[in-house]
Image 1: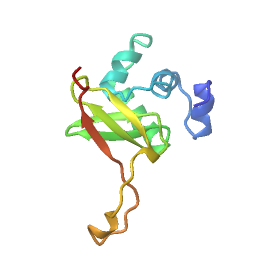
Image 2: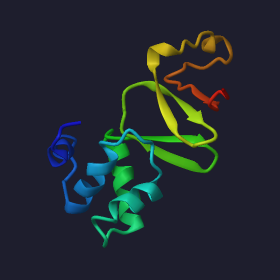
Image 3: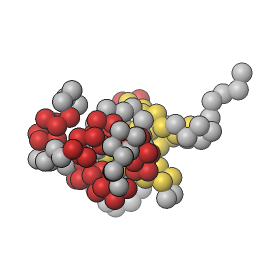
Image 4: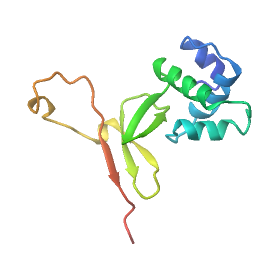
Length: 133
């Protein structure tokens, strides 16, 4: 991501309004995988008039423009990932923290023999907990 969020938005055809830049300042630079409500809570501290609807609409726009990836890693839980490069995820089930796993760290083979479909993409989501000492 460019250090200038407004410039990055323009580069993807997004008009950089004040609320879009404020949301982008957080969500496009974080290493977290925040939900829309987490984005709203975080950004409204510096942009108090920001509505939830504006956050949802902006996040969906960022996804359409490929600035973010929308992930459903658990039933009913949608999060947003600023890392749009191919990668996998590890979910710490105790803390809820989602970690990125490099694409090359996981190998998946034989998918084409499971069903008679041409596979366009896939993502591995691992789940676990810290080992007890």
